[in-house]
Image (cartoon, rainbow, N blue to C red; front, side, top):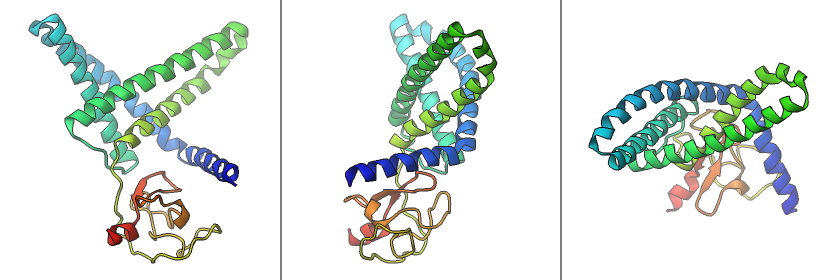
Length: 219
C-alpha cells in the first residue's frame, strides 16, 4: 500500500514537471541572464570591498553575491510561480548560498556527462542544443526547489467546502478544504488525505504550499 502511494506521488511529480516545463524554462533562462548581469556588478563591488582588507573584503563580497542570487530567485519565484518567499536578509543570503551550491553540482554533473558522451561518439555534438534546453529547464527545477524551502504557505481566501470523511477516490469538492489554489487558481488542489497533521498540503497543479482553512479555524 505504501509503495503504491509512493509510486503515485513520484508519478504525480513527474507529470507536474512536464506540465510546468515552460515555466521551468522561463525561470531557468531568466535566472541565467540576471545572474550574468549580477556577476558584472559583483566584480565591481568586490574590487571596492577588497579595500576593506582581503579577508573582510572577500567575506563581504560573497555575502553580497549570495544575497543578490537569493533576491533574484525570490523575485522570479513570486512572479513566475506566484509564491511568497521569505525576504529577510539572513534568509536571502542562505537562499543564495544553497542555490549556488545546488547549481554548481548540477552544472558539473551535466557538463561531465556531456563531455563523456561527446568523447564516446562525435555525433553527440548534434545533441548540444537539446542538452542546452534541458540544462536551462533543470536550472529552473533546482531554483524553484531551493526557493520552496524558503516559501511561506498560503492561506487561501477562496470559499471553504467543509471537511468530510476521508476518501481515496477522485478529487471533488467534498474531499478538499479549498475550492481552488490561490496561486494557480485551478480547482480542488488537494485531497483531504494529503493534508499533514500541521494542516499543510501541496497543490497538485503547481506544487504550492497551502495551509488548510479547516486547520486555521481549528487553531
